Image (cartoon, rainbow, N blue to C red; front, side, top):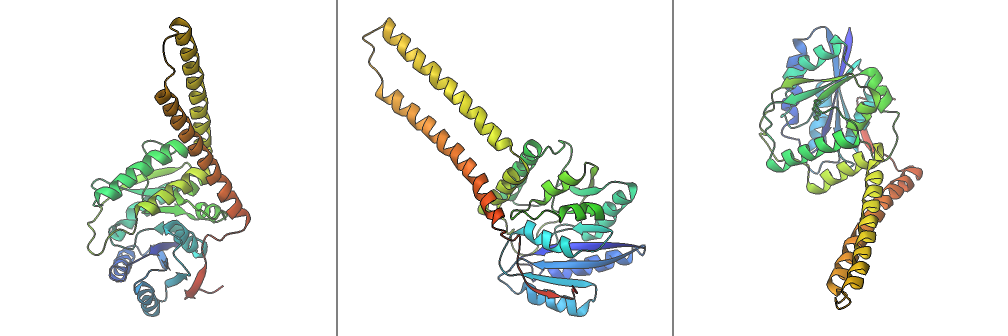
Amino acid sequence: MKKVSFVIPCYRSEKTLPGVIAEISETMKRLPQYTYNVFLVNDCSPDNTFEVIRKLCQEHENIRGISLARNFGQHSALMAGLRYSDGDFVVCLDDDGQTPADEVDKLLNKLEEGYDAVYAKYEHKQHSAFRNLGSMVNERMTRMMLGKPKELYVSSYFAVKRFVVDDMIRYENSYPYVIGLVLRATKSITNVAVTHREREVGASGYTLKKLLGLWFNGFTAFSVKPLRIATVFGAVSAMFGFLYGLYTIIKKFVNPDVPIGFSSMMAAIVIFGGMIMLMLGLIGEYIGRIYITLNNSPQYVIREKINIEE
């Protein structure tokens, strides 16, 4: 009998978690060919989320609780849960009830067919306009920077086989990016259509700052393409500057009365200076992350564990 581990990062979900757990329990009763456990990772939520997790762990022996010492972000929380998971299949989903746990059989069936990873695809997303914009940018970024197939849709609701998880948890960089880790481990990935529900309680925990941080993780941890793009921009700018300087000299020879333009010179300085600063900032981002990684900065720090034996 195969085992399924559910990994759920939790943040501001004291009101939604019991419903998610109840739905998982009812769904797995319809799938007697599987045993299962659930790993709830509290990402230092400011509300009573961990107290709810503690209560759920007391009521269900197959629920495990992990509490992080500070807010490390969704992907670090996922990595914490993945490292303790022990299922043949591992399913990651959200804590807000928008990802339908009662349709997990669709993901598991695709794994049984032979795929290594399965992502839920939503025909009609119920996110806010800001969150949808962030998802669109993330889609373009993963396609351009990480080589994600154009037809593949990635989401926070996905299932992977054990060997994929084993490869993912080998990654110890301070800035994990789960999508990049899955794409690095296998190309046998597919989508399955599921329903996306409206949020009943609260609002998304993703802010602009968190989304930008997530994109930078994907940029700098799994691709050097930003550096190559910066190199191309630098070469194009240098060529443009050379041609503009040549044009200015020729124009002066043709018409000596043409005054040298202070405004055009300042515009050129501002443009090229800004591009240089942007490229230096990008290089600095890479170097800074290398420095932090060399200092063994952890992906997460666990304050407390419930129902987990070392």
